[in-house]
Image 1 (cartoon, rainbow, N blue to C red):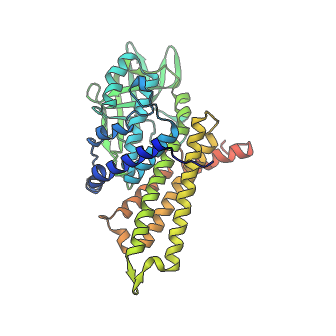
Image 2: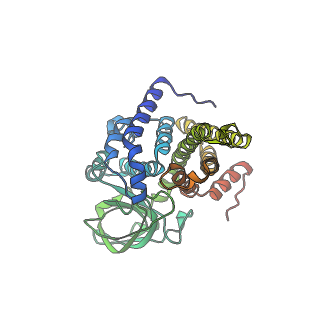
Image 3: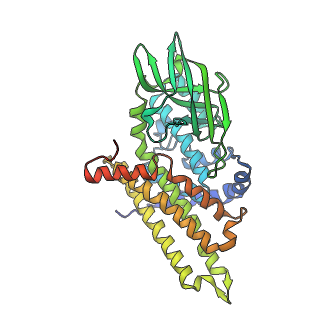
Length: 382
């Protein structure tokens, strides 16, 4: 499958690139070092569909298809992987609220998100629960007209900055015996403990641990129906994996472009280092990986748009693109030599951030097992 953007997509892509270069790029180094995020840029990015663009126009979106959205994720990854991650978290909350929220929840939570007036996070992972979300231990007990929430969530992206959390918890009520449900927990209304967790990767994404100790939330803050969260989460994994894959492609392309420019201009022994055979091999190997990852990503996005069973395609795209992006960043660091280590130059940040893509939405190992199961018709997971 060969993906070629149409004229409208080319115009959109070129407009995004100009905006990223003028409005986003000058902010990246400062905020990455400070572990902060410039939330003010989200309102400007909304004009391109970055905030709620997947929603139909009737709900305040642009009705963007998966292929176009993949292109947006690639451009965001090219500019800054922390930005792509924050966009993913924000839009994840938007899609959840749009599909499951009551009219009152959409007014209170969805509309402010679409205006970039509020910040959200999605709290799924726990200290003892990674890829196996069925083992979630956080629980919500219905007591009268309130749910009492107890548990810990870890590695929560944007958890440090968020105004409210969309929390997945094992639910106990007359109608639900331990199945997973989703709840909206407002930080200022029903306070919970937030502890920042500094990480090697994606330093501007406000990763946090959230502690819920007898936090009482109104029954009206149940998002969707009791016991339906696991099915909904699994349903959204394919698209989430493509989002990560395309962000990785963008970051890899950025590393490649920086390396090409450096190889052309940096001289050693009286000649540009790009004329050396081994440097050229690095550049070629990087290019092959970027092109292959991009093709796999758009193939998966197109399969989603065609309503095909895209599970294998999405897992392959996520598996290959995230691993390839870090390999490309590693080779870019090698091409740049000592300059690649400098924290005031982008290669060091791209090298760190691309490593982060191999874990969320199912690790490389999990993707391998998913693809193996689909190919062989037998599961390696007990």
